[in-house]
Amino acid sequence: MVMHKSNSVHDNAVRVLVDSMDQGIHELEWHGFPVRLIKQPWGELLISLHGAQVLHFQPIGEHPILWLTSQPKSSPSAIRGGVPLCWPWFGKHPEDEALPAHGVARTDQWQLIGELVSESGGCWILAPEENLWSDLSLSICIIVDHGRLTVRMTTENIGQNSHSVSQALHSYFAISSLGQAEIRGLAGCLYIDKLQAITGFELDTPFFITQETDRIYSHNKGVLLVDHGWQRVLSIIKQCSGSTVVWNPGAAAKQLVDVGLSQVDDFVCVEAARIAPFDNIILPVGESVNFETTISLAPYEPAQP
Image 1 (cartoon, rainbow, N blue to C red):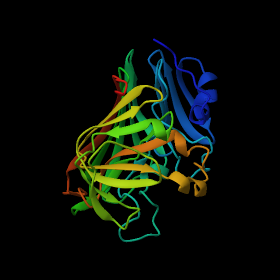
Image 2 (cartoon, rainbow, N blue to C red):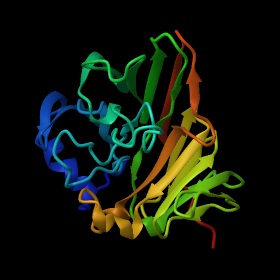
Image 3 (cartoon, rainbow, N blue to C red):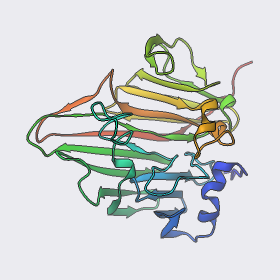
Image 4 (cartoon, one colour):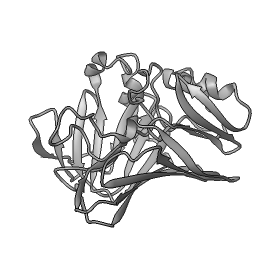
């Protein structure tokens, strides 16, 4: 197996920290955030206890799967990159815009309540230190298995009334460059373009992101992220999700202090979601719902001339 090396910004965001540690399990800080680094023969995993967020995942011999900012905001702000949790609402709160965007899960403190590491991966279960939102409970399960990464959110209605929930796993995928990254699997799907007055469109071909993009697709299947620069394919599948969000800030990254124009070319977000207008949840009393995404490598076939 060929070991890939890179001097890109998103590698260096965690490379110094990871390389300074021996194989094993380490409790550390990254830019002031408490993190757990798992470094094993199968690869590397970095989990933040701020937001229960996978920050870094790199199977042995591969490029990083996830992108992570090299210039994060200070705690208690959300960390830009990895797989942030959007819960129990996505975007602005539907009734109170003073509440934090994308909910409370990604900026709260979490604790590890279960951990099992094996020769091929492992399983980590996290719960918030305090209940995040009245009437709802949330737990997170992170699974690595033979180079695959799964992040699962389990929401339970512990209140006395049915409750509306919207959620997303806001995955930032590391790429060689935007011009080399092709998204397949969304053709024929209706989508909402949030940059064009919320008008409905239908995608008819695979596409490359060439400018600021913010779309919500009505879509419940898998997506392939084909990176022609790194000659790799990421398979992104999901469960209990009828929406897929595709996002990159493009030139607007200049206004994002934790992205900037120096990093905007290094990632694309392809997000499993359950959100309006396509499929938000009304969760009955006493019931729970699992929602997850799984990322793995798939065979790369060069483009035909």
